[in-house]
Length: 226
Ligand SMILES: C[S@@+](CC[C@H](N)C(=O)[O-])C[C@H]1O[C@@H](n2cnc3c(N)ncnc32)[C@H](O)[C@@H]1O
Image (tube, rainbow, N blue to C red):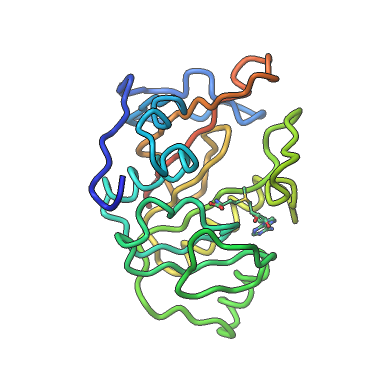
């Protein structure tokens, strides 16, 4: 994919007025005018090259480029796989994670903090991020019950809960005045102060899963409002 704008791998685009079955476990979230696209891991991998190993990066880079979000703070940075296919598009990459991993992509700044500690350091002024940012990226671990990730420890390492990480990621965004969130999660969750705008439903290959929708994950762009 290099650094050209990726082709959207859209199998369906529709406007929805409710979540059509996405359920955060408590209630359905009512949303309006959300674009939903469906993509399948195989279709991305068919493109070959680095798309084979980094299909999640294809989706993330597609959304970042589509909305012109080039100044990023990622509060669950992991290995930085999300940016593999569009590193040179990204003007500023600020990263935080409680664990410093073997990075696939190196950030410009790294804070070895969990999101809760990051928020308190930002609030106290011990950490200052003076440059304007476009988006907070949040990819919490361990949200797909019944799935084990033997090969990737980073998907199992969790401080707090996935929803709490999302909530605190959004607080970081509010504090820094960041207008967009990019959340990777299984449900379209309600986030105070932000409204969902675009959902990419990503269907990944999982032979061993037979429960409905276990192999679907959502990449969601939220924007300030609500
Ligand atoms: C699913 S991985 C992220 C993968 C990443 N998107 C990538 O492209 O490589 C989740 C990451 O969240 C980190 N993590 C766990 N608890 C956290 C917390 N409370 N705050 C921030 N990050 C946390 C883990 O260490 C792990 O690296």
